[in-house]
Structures are given as C-alpha cells and as structure tokens.
Length: 164
Image 1 (cartoon, rainbow, N blue to C red):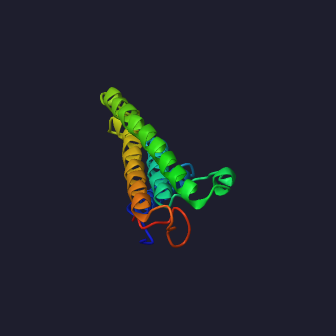
Image 2 (cartoon, rainbow, N blue to C red; image 1 turned 90 degrees about the horizontal axis):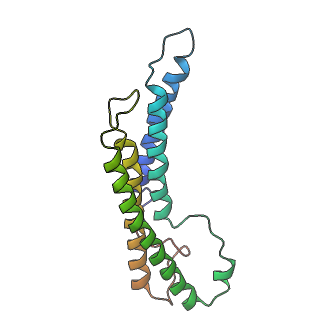
C-alpha cells in the first residue's frame, strides 16, 4: 500500500491553507493590520472540506473506530464474511447519502455565501465528494476481500489490503 493517499494529501493541503487563513484572521484582530471579513467564513468552509476529505483517508486504511470484541471472537471465515456484509451495508448507506448530498447541492445552488463570492453549494459539495470517495474505498475493499478469500489475511492485519 502506498504511504500517502490522494485524500490524505488533499486534506493535508487544505489544513495548510486553513492554517494560513486562520493566521490572517488572528493577525487581523491586532493593531498590525485590519483583517479581511471573509476569513471567518473561509476558515469554516476549508475546515468542512478538510474534515470530509479526511474521512475518505481514514476509510482507505479501514481505520474507523470500532468495537470488534464480538467479531474478533468469530472464526476467521465468519469474520471475513461479516466484514464483507458490513461493508455491503455501509456501501448501501453511502449510495443513499450520495443521493441526499446531490439533492442538497442542487437545493443550495442559488444561495449566495455571506462573505465569499461563491454559492453555498460549494460548501455542500464537500459532503458529496467525500461520500463518493468513501464509497470508492469501500467498493475497493470489498473487491480485495473477495479476491483474497476468507483464509488469507492481508499482511499487516485486517483492513490494510492494497487499496491505494
């Protein structure tokens, strides 16, 4: 598996941009200079985009928080099929979230942001992009688990298959 994912790189770049915007905002509250009014809204939007994209980076590594004590008690074969079933259920939920996200983007398309020269749909597109990226990672993980089979665990533990 590659060390850095596309999602991780984008989330990291957004963090750097967020940091710069926050510095402008902080120094704009001092006597040094008058800060632009858009920094508060921009910081919020960048943070939302960063957080949503980072969710896909976590999904890539199958590193979500989980309580696996029941699943860990199962035999390897049952654990394998349970993981696929859970991913299929998660994928179904994600497909529904794609539809909800798309409708939200359409509904907010004509709403103008308060201080930024953009539609509110730009903010809500973060959810749509994140859900599509997460769905992509879940589908790849399901396919990798099906190819690998129930008797073979990926090197490095469960969830760390080569889905870069």
